[in-house]
Length: 392
Image 1 (cartoon, rainbow, N blue to C red):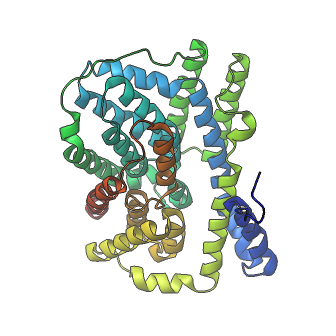
Image 2: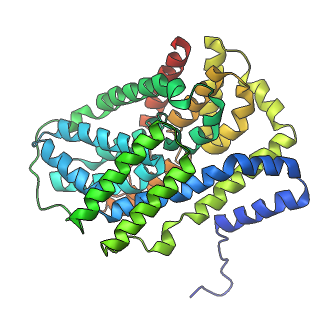
Image 3: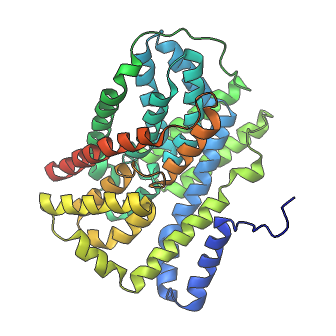
């Protein structure tokens, strides 16, 4: 019971809902702009809802636990091998199921794995944090920013972003190894038994569906219908095998997050309708030369860490113009750059929440460790990605 006179905190999603209704209703966001925004972002929001359901059903089937258990056994007692397999798990989860899935569902699995192997948890968790952001360039579905930009790549998103994505990922792995390698030496003894999947048949079906989704996303099938189909198949399989999901069905849809994201879309679109684009274009510059792209990338990294990568991307998107090189550079900046501040991306916010919740005996990570990793990794990863854009 609240104390008399205590102020009740207004939930962010409620404020966002007011914004979504008020901006078009008052005419601050012109009706034509609102319709165009809905056409562009509606499928993105549907995908966000559907892929979250897919991820939750994967967790309920024990897929992440099973992969982590297999990784622990494949490592054969070598901590460096265990870390390498965590890199593979976090990368695959980010690429196929999105960066937010990695932050929410892979982080606790990796922390439990660290506990069972007697490995210091922070290096493994920081690896997950880094890859949840920097591995999110390869497919459109890996990051909402990619989905918003995918239709602008005439020759296909994967063809344009493949080289920058691999460059960013390669530098990330090297930097992480340099930063955390001394904590990954030696051997471990796997203690206890890992979680048992609730149903072997459901586990196999879930793994097969995720593999098919990966192929469908890689060949750039429409993402919203594909994710909806995956969610439907996994939902039916879970019902057929009579497995109770870890999260109640009513809580699987991230409708609060979807409302907040929709409000961000509308706020930035409204700002653009009133001249924000001209101001940001002056800051981000123009041109496709290496210096021009570096300027745009620096602007994107700073903006992402100041206000969050999604509004930063939306605000700077007009500054990319029709240039594929500038668009690719902006994506590199806002996907691989938001690693310094705790609010720089939704995945970073979710990672902090999961670490605090699951790293019981160690407490929350010292903020300096996160900031230091970001200050080292973000400029190197973004520079590698921009260099790949220039060279390819």
